Image (tube, rainbow, N blue to C red):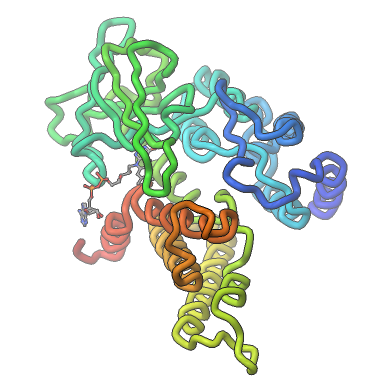
Length: 396
Ligand SMILES: Cc1cc2nc3c(=O)[nH]c(=O)nc-3n(C[C@H](O)[C@H](O)[C@H](O)COP(=O)(O)OP(=O)(O)OC[C@H]3O[C@@H](n4cnc5c(N)ncnc54)[C@H](O)[C@@H]3O)c2cc1C
């Protein structure tokens, strides 16, 4: 189908099928992650997810047999553009779509793809990520959670930590040590898929800096995992893990697309809380300068994304550049969130209470606190800078 025709048909379909309520900016509570424990925020949100899933447009570029829309990357980009034009919310989010799905497409067996991908696409199963452990964050290859070969299954014991959404997920994709004697620690790691709905898996929430409690410790105590749940080769999990991290960092470099927005733009916060002088400029020249710098950086980031897309289309994109995007986007996100709090002055330092506007002021403060975590999760900024230095042949 010609791209023009595809775009027109997509526009018509979205107009006819996206409920009006799903064309409003989403707050945290409006986001849909699916899964067995999913409570939809509204009937419209459920309907919207189902309609998009039926079209395969929750995962537009995946093959139709895996629950996707079978779209080319150009068509998927047009779909995104049309959704943005109408203000349509992303119907379904999560680790399955962002990370595990792409990794399974590359490394999974045909049985694993047919078993897991359609359930991700339809929002039936929610996934979380079991990589980090106490003592194995940046130095991930030091992980010690073990899987012993028991013939027809693995027996998994150990702890994972910082498991985002561990308390809401149904399954976890995990890095486990299957060889303690490998000459290189990376060579003794395997990638396992584990159903969390069993008594030998315990999840304990840890409060996050912004007050959110979807961040967890996960314990495995003699968990039996079928051999069929091994992705890739035994002791070959490091390759799968690294490829998946590229997808995670790619997603995090486009955070603004997934995170719920604030009720005002950064310029509106500046106008309301700092104020304009007679010349129409922000009255505080230091804040004006910081805002200008931030907006210029955002613009540069958008253009860099466009360039990366063009390089991708031309088949010359170096996927290692994702470290640069992840580091820059999350650091700039922190600068933007800090700036809004600076605009708010003393109104930016409330945690709760009637002296603060819940939707505008407290939301901005919580968002500022939350922004701190993105430069840690998915690999810290320092680690991304090390990776970039390595690519450039420079020392860490
Ligand atoms: C919000 C959030 C969500 C997360 N979600 C998940 C999840 O779902 N699943 C999961 O498995 N993990 C998750 N993580 C864990 C995350 O991947 C780790 O926190 C991260 O990799 C850093 O590890 P660490 O916390 O152990 O810090 P450390 O590795 O102990 O690092 C401490 C500090 O030292 C610096 N540092 C460490 N090594 C170097 C070096 N070689 N050179 C320079 N500086 C260095 C780091 O940059 C950091 O500033 C999440 C973390 C956060 C904050």
